[in-house]
Image (cartoon, rainbow, N blue to C red; front, side, top):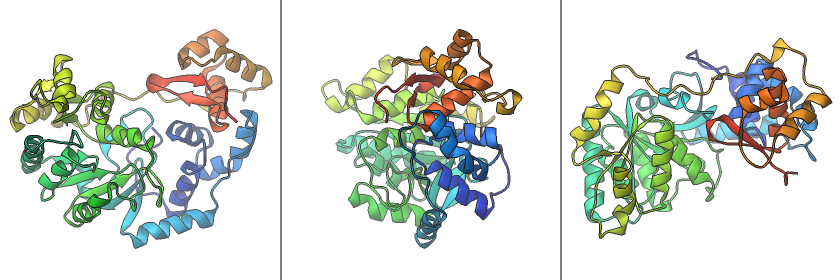
Amino acid sequence: MVASASPLLSDRQRLNWLRLIRTANVGPASFRDLINRFGSAEAALEILPELMISGGASRLPRIPAVSEIEAELELARKAGARFVCIGEPDYPAPLKEIDNPPPVLAVKGDGAVLRMPAISIVGSRNASLTGMKMARMLAAELGRDGYAVVSGLARGIDTAVHQGSLDTGTIGILAGGVDQPYPPENIELCTEIARRGGAIVSEMPFGWQPRAQDFPRRNRLVAGMAMGLVVVEAAQRSGSLISARLAGEMGRLVFAVPGSPLDPRAGGTNGLLKDGAILVTETADITGAIQPMAGSQPSFRASLEEPPDFSAIQPPGDTERDRVVEALGPAPVAIDDIIVHTSLHPAQVFMVLLELDLAGRLERHSGGQVSLLFNAG
């Protein structure tokens, strides 16, 4: 990861981290590689234009000015929010273990809830009254058992989950900025969560209006912040099933509440049970499976290995860049396969991939695979 458990960043470091992650084409993976290679966000920002040109960028994305980030920091302060960076005490421990975790989170509320063992509960927006009652009951009982309860602040099941765990500690994950709750009818719920010991969390900038493509990113955080994920109601091809798939890929336990075969809102949950999800009819089904993990937290699947030391060998030249680009195509390939195919030093391959990523020419896939974007620029 970018950092292990460590003291708080300085104000200057936090500002530069935000400048770097707010730059177009800088995602969690490239952020990590930049910090590993250049030692700090400040140093990475200085070299960024050169790296983008080396990667073949047709135009250079604008790096946010210091004044822009200072304005965002001030907006956060006025809203009662703050930015937590990976490695700081309030950064959720399970989230650090996923592939390419977000380097910076905006948080409104109590940081203590982010240090509690957590379980996520998600489900249908168009929920039944029975489903809402079940979600509220599970959330309340898990809270009384000492767990923070995570959900995505959507209508239906998510809303019931947060309502059920308001008094014990709930974490709401937003697809937009912390100051842009969605749906609008949950604005008051967000306020109550932050006021009553819970937390509202987002990796998006202040003022960011959520788009359709932002909700899978939110689902990734919902799955990544907890030791297990419970699906109460979900139709086939629903967002809740995306969360369940992500949780399974992260090595989390996946639970599902069974429903009537005649109710389409149970089609997804019943399908999860057929695929091996743990059946839930009461809270003890969840806690019984989670408790062995809680005793040795964090006990999650190890994230991808760190890239090699970039300073260990000469930077790549045009010949090395051409060999890596030729090895890439529209289909995802493993980075290890690129290293073997090109016979280049791993540090050179990682550096070329970083340049392509910053130039907007690389797409990263789960499992550390990458592909080339031919229509970029």
